[in-house]
Image (cartoon, rainbow, N blue to C red):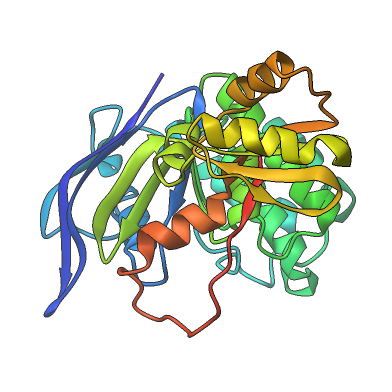
Length: 314
């Protein structure tokens, strides 16, 4: 299968450096989330990979070749960058047929992607009447048209209803299971955490992180456990934890929070003390909090807001 390889990629617009010496690879068989604040260089990088802009320096290749040198590129790379790009006076079917003919793709495939994206019933409808979500589905249909090895999607959930969000999430995961290379840019952290296996994070045009999702979360958080015991045993467990060097924080109904601990160790300690457990959960920082922590100094536009501690169960 085919990977996306970016090496020392740089792009200047006048005196503004949009992309600054980026090096990373997007591998087959996983969904790679492409994250970064507004102005971080994500869209520019995707345009450079697709040959829509020329780099100032460095290279961006697909399967070892520049996109512009690919034969029948729609069969190699499917991309959604702007769902509004389709001509409004065309029908959905005619829009896809024009793409198919120019890439040597049969008409049968047009019907298949219309069906797959839920647009079969409106294939003969003019695009200018489509809602944002329908245009988004049409853009995804165009990206899938050539049954490509590489799929690049910029904000694919934009405008989709809850059913559509679940659908695109499962679609991306299925494409990765099939061994394809999937790169997805998104600002929706909760949604990204539901589908991404790997993360590439940019800030001010530079690479901030290139890690598997779990490693990224663990690198931005300290272990923490939430444990609940019968209220009558709370003080006894707290004393045992203190003897082991922990500093438990008491909550309601016999609940304790223990920083710097793992659930297995706390469970073993409670068992040794003969204390019954009602709840024992490893907690982990959310993707949103880890991302905000990493990119705090790399945001071009930032609003003042109260800080909060967002954690989720691991």
